[in-house]
Image 1: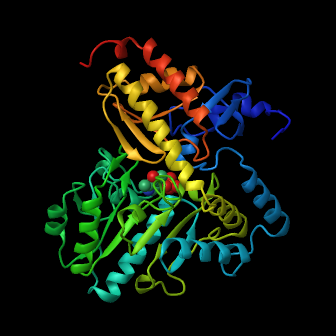
Image 2: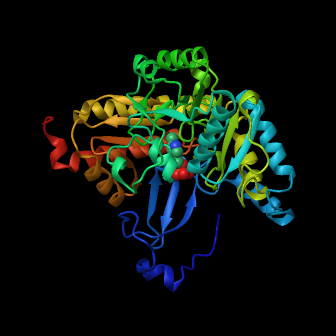
Length: 406
Ligand SMILES: *Cc1c(COP(=O)(O)O)cnc(C)c1O
């Protein structure tokens, strides 16, 4: 895309007008294309964060631009009180792809999870004598609204913004006995991520997920999978549960679903779809512009060979990172497809991401001892090699990384 580069004066100086919700570096991005970002000084960055695994087709991908342009020219919003053709088409494609029956569109992952929590509680009211508790996992991340913060098991969050929404008992991940022991008459569901993303790419074991599916069926409660980070091709299949051979009762999607657009969804099995008119909604939900974008993304992801390419590139990245880890005394890789994390064995993640940024590479350290890699699903092998080169030289230059692990 060749867009004339004219940053406004305000954008150039006025960071004071923004609430300080993150320690942002003094960089202002103005352009993106594929795996590359450009700042207002013209410096280029290789992007292995992609808006937190959001831009699954990279920055400003053509199919998305085309769909947005066409849809914007036709119809941007007609209110969620009416059907629109893009919403219907995307809902049909998602239910067909997922094995679930109905969709509710949302604008963010947290909002999709809020909807999942409400749907489960409604179902518990109707079918489980008012049961409302949802068992979630230590280290899990489900969003930043009050209920989804309560559902999250992020260390330190217990005390933030009290009082919390009650009804989210926690269990350790990958411990099926702990779940079995935590189920009571008040339990309506178990909710978790197939791979805990924000916790540092910590996978739920396949056997554990299968056991969870069986246990929740036996006990008559729901299984909710939060695939906001793992879904939409990120792990090499459209949804991570497809590699395990289970289907959840409720599924939430976000991040990659809109290819960078604010689009998320809650899907459910027909037995669970019990919202009555007026129970759930939202001004922008299912608007034609975003759902047309989502449809363009899903169309790309489901083209023959696309997901094979994700697995292939993921393996290439894994091989390269394994060699790099050996060279620098790092530990094991975690994750699947193009959602990988490297155990650094020491808290040098922030130092590496800062040095990488200077060197023109965007990386994320979800915790101090780990680097997370979540490039565009369309990232090329050459771009992976370039990333590895930059990371390698950054690690060489770090005094802490040179010696043996402490
Ligand atoms: C990012 C994320 C969310 C929250 O999504 P938002 O769009 O930021 O609200 C929820 N669950 C998981 C697993 C996520 O990775």
